[in-house]
Amino acid sequence: MIEEYLRRLGVPRRAPSAAYLRELHRAHVARIPYTNMEILLGRPGTVAPEHALRQITTGRGGYCFQLNGAFSELLRELGFTVTLHRGYVVSDPAVAETDLNHLALLVHGLPDPAHPDGVWLADTGLGDALHDPLPLRAGEHPQGPFSYALGDTLRAEPGWRLRHDPAGSFAACDIAAAPAALGDFAGAHEHLSTSPRSPFTGLFSAQRRTADGVQILRSCVLTTHDADGRREEHLPTRTAWREALADVFGLADDELDRLWPDVAAAYERWAAERAAVPAPRAGGAPVGEPA
Image 1 (cartoon, helix red, strand yellow):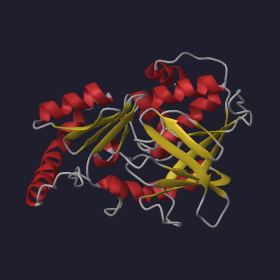
Image 2 (cartoon, rainbow, N blue to C red):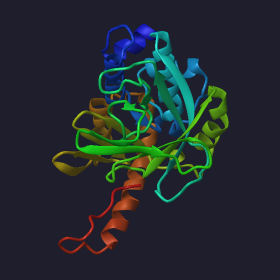
Image 3 (cartoon, rainbow, N blue to C red):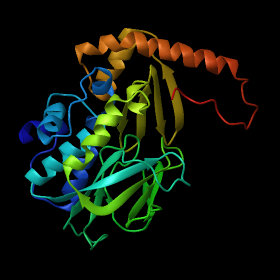
Image 4 (cartoon, rainbow, N blue to C red):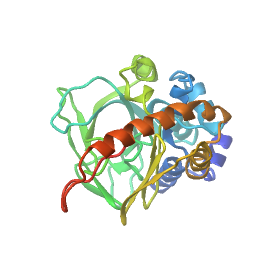
């Protein structure tokens, strides 16, 4: 299964190093989409390693519990030293406490000239965030057209806070310093994949990160955000939507057709709400996207 995983990434087997970790991470966020497709199709699965690996190696995507869960298994099989950590994504930078909603990875023992400590934050499950793993040290970390920062967590336990770029889809992610076990995330996965209050059970979304920027499909609006700015494209038909899923995100599951009526209806509701909002004056804030 590991060889199938590497074939999907388009990366050969090599000895562990910081450079190899970056190569794997970049391929993962570009080729394996962050998406709630499996949840909306009624196939949320579990956090078990075999499920996460099967989901990746059969051409699908997932969200943090599957993406980082599978990535941690891949890294261990390749000889890396990995620990799992509880994560807490927040949409408001002032928020200090929230429920467990993320799985983060630290990779150890990979010193390089720029980071002799050799501990890296690797996260393929944050959608529009990291392209490269980050050295686990405080400071600013630019990546392409975006910039991130690491500092102390706001939570009442030791850890770190990853601040997203201001243009990103969330404000920050707090990461607990204490290592965790995969089973620690089972309850959070059950809630996020089944609760009607979960953001993952509502609007369809797929995201991929490249060196140039990020591409996000919400409902049937494809947004590209890179150094040239932000551009939106409405995909008005099921065929156009399916083509974008296949060509941009590598998703070609035949069951996706079941989702199109809800996707199209969500866009119509959003478009009607958008039309009812007066256009901003010159210099005003842009009108938002489906969310």
